[in-house]
Image 1 (spheres, rainbow, N blue to C red):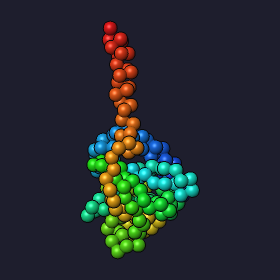
Image 2 (image 1 turned 180 degrees about the vertical axis):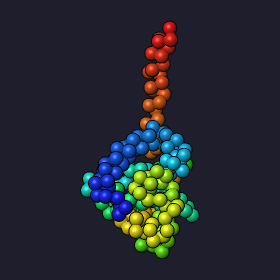
Image 3 (image 1 turned 90 degrees about the vertical axis):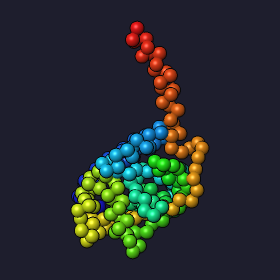
Image 4 (image 1 turned 30 degrees about the vertical axis):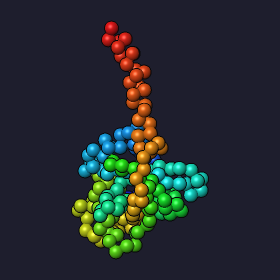
Length: 193
């Protein structure tokens, strides 16, 4: 992230760790569509489910994305040091949670492709506040400025392979809403009396 200081980059990384946990929780509670309700400001956000390269454990990472010609594109804004990026290099078979569904997919780094800057700009525009938080203004920057500002970024293309349904996906904790309502309703009714 060449447009910000190393201290600011560290602060952003720490802040995104907490924001990511919140975002995954919201998806698991069945609120993924709501998170994506205002993409111009909040960004287009999906969750990538991937396998830890060292631990072998399932990991979930929310990322901004753009869809172009049926493929999904996202960036690793912190470059090669991002754990989720290194995980998908080791295990490119992933699952993605999108507002309109859940599927298996294959991820690949296409940072050096011919249309790299076009896709990078698309993802950054679709990221809402996140690009601006990193000091990048994709709608206003010239190509050479954008290339310099994203020099360490990695561009990932994700190709869907099969639709998923069942347990373990987005909304797996949505049962909490009716349970909370059922548990709290008697208290609310008692207070009204």
